[in-house]
Length: 202
Image (cartoon, rainbow, N blue to C red; front, side, top):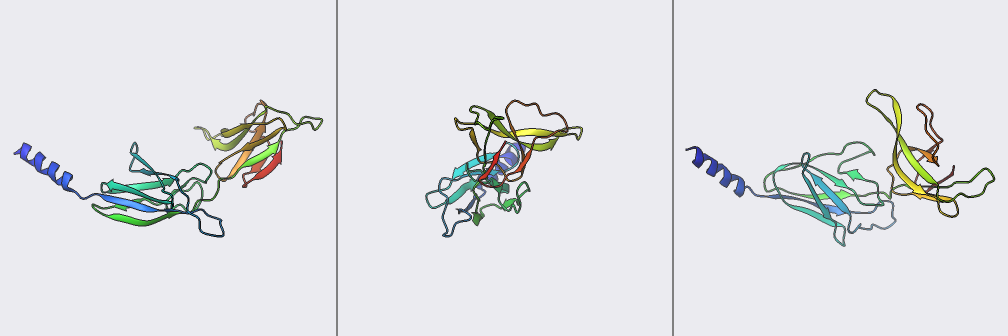
């Protein structure tokens, strides 16, 4: 009897209709609507389950053959601000997508903005550009004891003109540091807000 019950449950699960999630990725901030081809999208259902697809030449994407469940959808394309479906503000959670058996969820859309860049020049005391200096961008975080600390999230080397560009960062406030100067607890280097294509000097 137990073997028969297991077999029946297996057949029911195998016969459950599969669903899908589909939509389109469009560039934000353009005068004319432009699709974003080859954009990377991640679909997650709980920890450890990840499905990745790319949008086609017209910016359209589809996740097919999905079991019923609760999914979260992310856009993670280089050069654009990462976002989750339903997310209203940066660094805030989005909305889950519930898929029932055989349901085809459509009209999902993303309109990502280009990711900000921090740019500037490193000069010595005489105003001469310095090459091959490591410039880091860090964000203020807190350790397990609640003490403020800095976490480096991106970096770049200066070129022969002392210029640097740190690409594809998330919106927010950053502490920019040039060279190997040690950052002491509670003492932070000069802060630059991360605006797109911002230029500063260290």
